[in-house]
Length: 338
Ligand code: PHE
Image 1 (tube, rainbow, N blue to C red):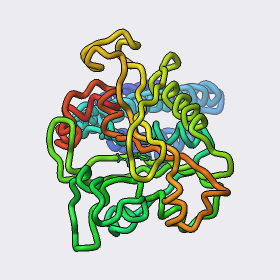
Image 2: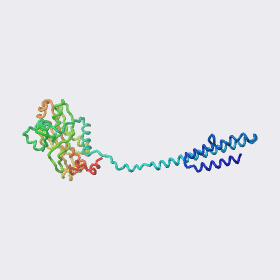
Image 3: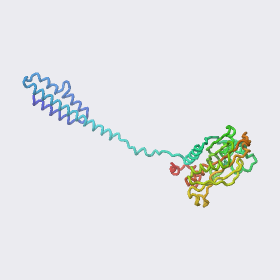
Image 4: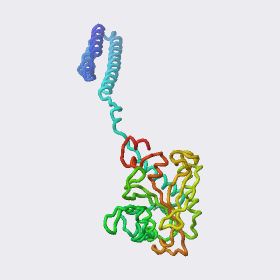
């Protein structure tokens, strides 16, 4: 009996050792330890063992069975591990392959527009939007530029029909807002504008941000304070602002606003053409004519307005030499402004 047990254990162990899959291992388990397995057969033979030997043989059988079960378990986990490794190897994903899908970046004009608008929101302004195809009335007449006014020449306009044109300035939003909203008004209006212009510093399509404040006792000095605060946030703390007299039909007095050059800090360099100053925007005190055109009493209310070229701000901020670079959509150029 003892020999038989040893023989079965040896045979079973050899078979377990040779198993290459868990399926085959299962077959071996059934063949030896299953209901009708060889090992179970031996247990049945116990009835013919003399009573004196029964405890010894019984112990042998139990030990043999336990060791075969342990061996099966060990082999099983060995096979499972091997199978997992095989699967990991065959299902491996090359994550470097997906590298050719690039994530886009925000256009530098959008970056600068958002920055400008954010600063004004911080100063208590709200944001307004308006149409790009505009009536002659809002683009010119309401702003004190009648049909025969020479100031029309300064803005080489693109007409859609006799009375409709692509707006040449976001100042259209001044009259639109004053006609639809009661003072106090404190708005900025970012948007596209169009002119029949095309060279290194003029694009037929460009971007402006208009600002308008209407309230009681609004003054030119408040305009200067607001723009100074803006310039210091946009260009840096040391920035100074100066006003030069200018002319716009819808503001009186009108000013051209310069900032100290953000590159040389005012000492004079290539960007500021040696002057230390950079012209940044047009502004002024709202002309009473505009108030009258919009049904606001100029004896009660006063206001100021300003208009930035967003493209110009971006060119100054990033040292971009040609406005057309902003519209060619060359990815190598755009990628730099993340
Ligand atoms: N609309 C003017 C321009 O395009 C700028 C401006 C806006 C001037 C508001 C004064 C007040 O040149």
